[in-house]
Length: 106
Image 1 (tube, rainbow, N blue to C red):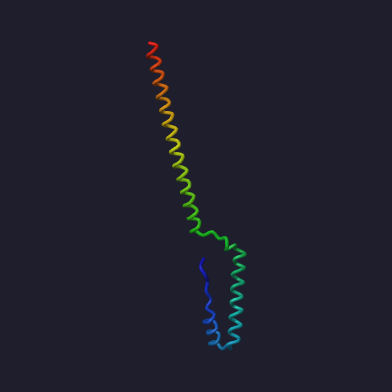
Image 2 (tube, one colour):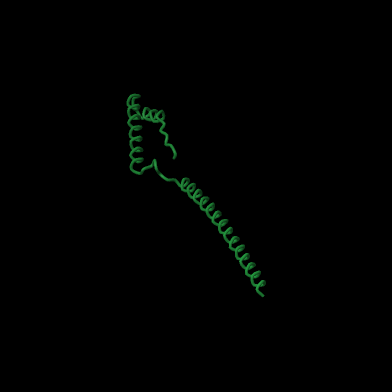
C-alpha cells in the first residue's frame, strides 16, 4: 500500500507566506496532521483497509492454487497409468494361462 506524505515544513512556510504567525502556522499544521490521521484511521476502519486484498495477492493465490492443481493432476495421471499397465499385464497373464490350459486340453 502506498504511503501519503505530508510536508509540514512546506505547509508552515505557505501559511507564514499567507500572513500567519509562526505559532499560528504550527498550530494549524498540527491540527491538519491530526485531521488527516483521524480521517485515514476512519477509512481504515470503515473499509477494512488493513485486510484489503490486492490484485497482486489474488494473482499470487491463483498461481499457488494452479500449481497445486497441476501437481494433483500429474499424480492422478501417473496413478492411472500404473493401473492401466497393471490391468493390461493381468489380462495378458489370464489370456496366456487360458491359452496354455486350452492347448493342454486339446
